[in-house]
Structures are given as C-alpha cells and as structure tokens.
Amino acid sequence: MAFLLLLHEKMRLKRQVNKLTLKQCKYGSRLDRMTKNIARVQKMYSSKMTQLEKQAQMMQSQASVFFQNQMGLGMQNQAFNPWNMSGGGITSFVLNQVGGMLKKDEFEVPDGNGGKTTVLMGEATAKAMMQEYMAGTLRPQYDKTDSTKITGYGANGNYSAEQYQIFTSAMQQAQMNQSQAQMMCQQMSSNYQSNVSIWLEAAKAQLEAEQDAALAPLEAEQTDMELEKESTETQLAYAKERLQALEQACSEGIKDSAPKFGLG
Image (cartoon, rainbow, N blue to C red; front, top):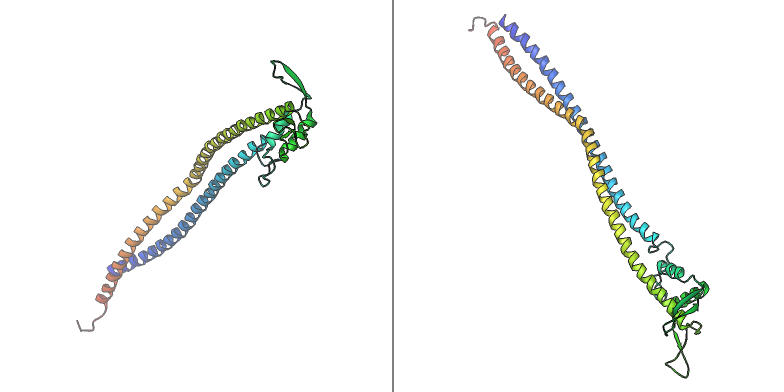
C-alpha cells in the first residue's frame, strides 16, 4: 500500500515538473519579447531626442542667416564679392545705406565762412560716384601745372569737393551703421540661441517624461514576470528534488518487494 502511495505521488510530481518546466519556458519567451519591446520604445525615444537636438541646432543656424539677410549683412542679394579684391569692399548694407542718404537733390554744407552753401547732388550723381568708388577711380585730380591744386574728383574730375565730401560723409556714416547693425545682429542671434537652448531643455524634459510614462507599465509587467519566473524556478527546483527522492524510494521499494525465491 505504501509503495502504491509513493508511486502515485511520483506520478503527480512528474506532472507538476512538466507543467512548471513548460511554464518556465513560456515566461522566458515572454520576458524576451518584453525586453525587446522595452528596447524598441527606448530606441524610438532616443531617435526623437536626437531629432529634437538636430532641429534645435538647425533653427539656431537658420536664425543667424535670417538676421544677417534681414539686415543686408548675409549672402542674400549680397553686393560684396570676397573674391574680387578690387571691388571696393562694399556690402549690400553700405550700398543701400549710402543710396538712401544721397537720395536728395540738394545738400547744405559749411562754406568755410560760418555759413552754408547748397550743393546739387541727385540720385544719378550719387550712383555714378558709387560706381567710381567701387572701381577705385573716385580720387582727386590735380592741376597739371600745380600739383597741390585739386581740380575735381573722379576719373574725369567731374565731381566737386563738396560733392566728394557729402559722398565720403555718407560712406563713413553707412560703415558706422553697419558696425552697429553687426553688433545688433550678433546680439539677436545670441538671444535667439539662448532661447532655443531653454526651449530644447524643456522639450527634452517633456520627451523624457513621455518615455517614462511609456516604459512604466512595460517595466512593471517585466518585473512581475521576473518575479513569477523566479517563483516558478524555485517551485520547479523543489519539485525536482522531491521527485528525485521519490524515485529513489520507489526504486528501493521495488527491490524490497521483489521475490527472493528462498535466496534471502
């Protein structure tokens, strides 16, 4: 009777070991899939983070270009050609500034006697003087008989000293305005880049929070699976240990119940 009970318990434990072994395999497979899902989510958010950083960098670069072009200091419609050494070094900013300042037909300049005199200029004259300036021919012309006497300005001496003075003053003012515009452009670019950096940190924090929210249920499920897998492994180890002991007991019981035919 005792042997039959041992045999019954042995069969029960075998079934339990088989079930626990199958359960252990299933948990292993599910954990592998869960690990892959977690890695997939992490990879997706890592890619989003990289795209976010690249987007911020692109916006900062484009902002600098935008501010420069807006002020006539960038490459857009730029008159200055760095490869042309004899071009007078005129940027679009200076060109537009001088053109704007010399639009009037008449200018008043000091006459040297405490008064003022009216000088005719005009947009056409200013444009012609600018072309000569860029060509390098807007320089004084001297009297052939008196090398100290200036007879006019320009290649043909067509412009008066007063016109030359007005043009030169406008050029100096335009170059000063350009320096101020460069400083303003740099300041605007710096402010924008700083604001984009603040925006980027906030956007990254939000993205990290979204990632944590997406990973939380997956990681919780993974933890539960790992605990259940560990519990299953513990039960399986215990069941195998008991099964081994029962198999040994059954083997000894078989030996004891075997007929000895008078040999014992």
